[in-house]
Image (cartoon, rainbow, N blue to C red; front, side, top):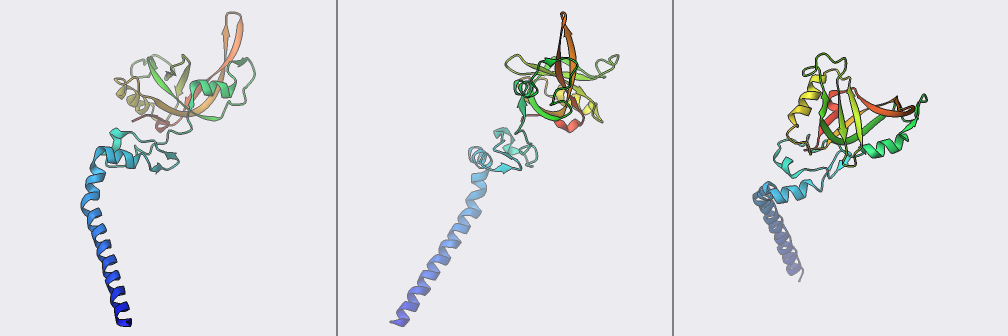
Length: 201
């Protein structure tokens, strides 16, 4: 009886061993094919977390050899309207708002009729651009990075895709706007690093 019990345990162990070998072979042969399938790859990638930015995946990026652009953080960016609400814009002139000097992350769309860089406008004393949202709100971005050329190259590279959302990180700066006998205080963003502007993929 004991010998029979031992034999049964041996049989069970062999079955389990063969089962794990089968699973291992299955994964080895079929898993690369599953992952390479665009639908399956999109499903897998869209359910992983990239750093502090879960589920920011574009299916067009699944063919990339690196996860760096896929995992580009875009969470936590204000819409222009939300940023104005946060700063209580418009505000009274002559007084700093609480949000001034803080670092903001804002998203929108490039207004390509309001992009001014030294290459195309060498006589201007500044370099800036304007972004807008679909609700008619707009915001000026002034560039003070170490290499503004890279910023504007990136912008012009995406000019054929004006529907692409742009993500910008920079310092909130307030300024007074006299308008028809009245005055309101508004805000603009100072972009201080060229890598703090990027587009969705």
